[in-house]
Image (tube, rainbow, N blue to C red):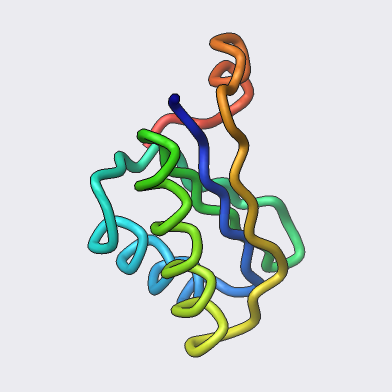
Length: 89
Protein backbone atom coordinates (compact mmCIF):
# COMPACT_ATOMS: atom_id res chain seq x y z
CA UNK A 1 0.00 0.00 0.00
CA UNK A 2 1.33 3.42 -0.91
CA UNK A 3 1.75 6.23 1.59
CA UNK A 4 2.82 9.85 1.95
CA UNK A 5 5.14 10.90 4.75
CA UNK A 6 5.32 14.46 6.03
CA UNK A 7 7.79 16.03 8.45
CA UNK A 8 7.18 19.67 9.36
CA UNK A 9 9.87 21.79 10.98
CA UNK A 10 10.48 25.35 11.99
CA UNK A 11 13.54 26.34 10.02
CA UNK A 12 15.14 25.21 6.80
CA UNK A 13 18.14 23.41 8.35
CA UNK A 14 15.85 21.05 10.25
CA UNK A 15 13.91 20.39 7.04
CA UNK A 16 17.12 19.57 5.15
CA UNK A 17 18.25 17.22 7.90
CA UNK A 18 14.83 15.57 7.92
CA UNK A 19 14.82 15.14 4.13
CA UNK A 20 18.32 13.68 4.17
CA UNK A 21 17.44 11.20 6.91
CA UNK A 22 14.16 10.23 5.23
CA UNK A 23 15.80 9.52 1.89
CA UNK A 24 18.58 7.50 3.51
CA UNK A 25 16.24 5.54 5.79
CA UNK A 26 14.11 3.82 3.23
CA UNK A 27 13.10 3.31 -0.35
CA UNK A 28 11.15 6.58 -0.62
CA UNK A 29 10.98 9.36 -3.18
CA UNK A 30 11.03 13.07 -2.39
CA UNK A 31 7.73 14.62 -3.52
CA UNK A 32 7.95 18.21 -2.36
CA UNK A 33 9.29 20.82 0.01
CA UNK A 34 6.58 23.17 1.17
CA UNK A 35 7.53 26.58 2.58
CA UNK A 36 4.44 27.30 4.63
CA UNK A 37 5.42 30.72 5.99
CA UNK A 38 6.71 32.00 9.28
CA UNK A 39 9.76 29.78 8.96
CA UNK A 40 7.72 26.56 8.79
CA UNK A 41 8.84 24.02 6.20
CA UNK A 42 7.33 20.63 5.39
CA UNK A 43 9.12 17.84 3.55
CA UNK A 44 6.96 15.23 1.80
CA UNK A 45 8.03 11.77 0.61
CA UNK A 46 6.14 8.87 -0.94
CA UNK A 47 6.62 5.14 -1.17
CA UNK A 48 5.31 1.90 0.23
CA UNK A 49 3.82 2.13 3.71
CA UNK A 50 6.57 0.34 5.70
CA UNK A 51 9.35 2.37 4.04
CA UNK A 52 7.49 5.65 4.54
CA UNK A 53 6.82 4.87 8.19
CA UNK A 54 10.51 4.21 8.80
CA UNK A 55 11.50 7.32 6.83
CA UNK A 56 9.14 9.59 8.80
CA UNK A 57 10.48 8.26 12.10
CA UNK A 58 14.06 8.89 10.98
CA UNK A 59 13.18 12.33 9.61
CA UNK A 60 11.47 13.34 12.85
CA UNK A 61 14.52 12.37 14.91
CA UNK A 62 16.86 14.27 12.57
CA UNK A 63 14.65 17.37 12.55
CA UNK A 64 14.44 17.36 16.33
CA UNK A 65 18.23 17.13 16.64
CA UNK A 66 18.93 19.92 14.14
CA UNK A 67 16.11 22.33 14.87
CA UNK A 68 12.49 22.34 15.88
CA UNK A 69 10.21 19.46 14.91
CA UNK A 70 6.61 20.63 14.56
CA UNK A 71 4.92 17.42 13.40
CA UNK A 72 5.49 14.12 11.64
CA UNK A 73 2.73 12.17 9.95
CA UNK A 74 2.11 9.31 7.55
CA UNK A 75 -0.94 9.27 5.30
CA UNK A 76 -1.78 5.78 4.05
CA UNK A 77 -3.28 5.19 0.62
CA UNK A 78 -3.53 8.87 -0.42
CA UNK A 79 -6.06 9.81 -3.07
CA UNK A 80 -4.37 10.39 -6.42
CA UNK A 81 -5.70 13.97 -6.61
CA UNK A 82 -3.99 14.88 -3.32
CA UNK A 83 -0.71 15.26 -5.20
CA UNK A 84 -2.19 18.31 -6.96
CA UNK A 85 -1.92 20.21 -3.67
CA UNK A 86 1.83 19.67 -3.43
CA UNK A 87 4.60 21.64 -5.12
CA UNK A 88 6.93 19.71 -7.36
CA UNK A 89 10.55 19.30 -6.24
